[in-house]
Length: 319
Image 1: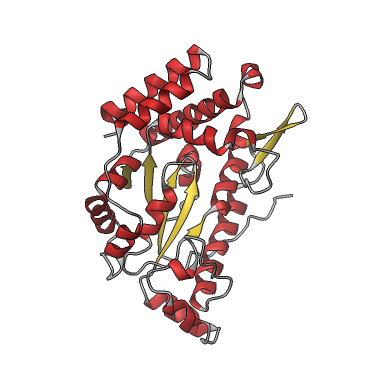
Image 2: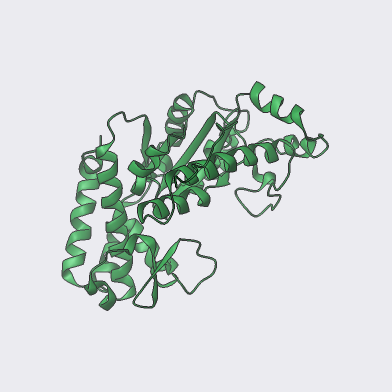
């Protein structure tokens, strides 16, 4: 007997943007600036997208179900935003409405009636729905099969800075222990691991936390590079943490052009709020490298240094 396929309706939100990168690349900082542009809705986290891609990769769900669910999720998200349902009003969160460039909009929407009139408003306006996502590029070829139309900002950062930050934040030691880490986990030998370690080598088990941090960064970076190089029509905006920090105004201008929007009256003040632009000191990275060298085996340290050199030479050959 033939199984029924899941039906999907096209997303109401026609302008969706992913601000993507592996953890600690500066997505929240970038997202805060991007969401200050004209026509932007408030910033959201895109864990729902992130979790479906590993499930598809590991054949834990079907493509028709994933597309049906995600399109429905997008429609529900934009509908709820238009009536300020389920929005985040926490002032300490970057995704909170008090930190949105025009918070009065969401307060006004609280008084609006729901119904078909909401759908008409969505279709009439060319609003942009921004999501912070982790590791979508790692599975980009899978995501592209879903044929959900999004614009894509991909952020890279020097792997030395990433590895150091991962270690200092204790990320490599929190999987399966900290319930505030929402990365999708798999079970192997009765132990929890992040989904991207589905085929890791036994040598990983013997690594210390610092070595694991480096291993994760190298693994995810290389997967991102490989996926990006496979894309034929690269309608993606590629940037770096360093550019966002040191050439902030110029970079945000380029992003606004890519997204077919412009600076709002608050964008420059948002840049100033982030204390940008600023010059990054090379001595800080040198000290990080010395720190890491004293904690890891020479082989993995050498691989990290090699990857950093490729990054600083020409962004892994991606530009």
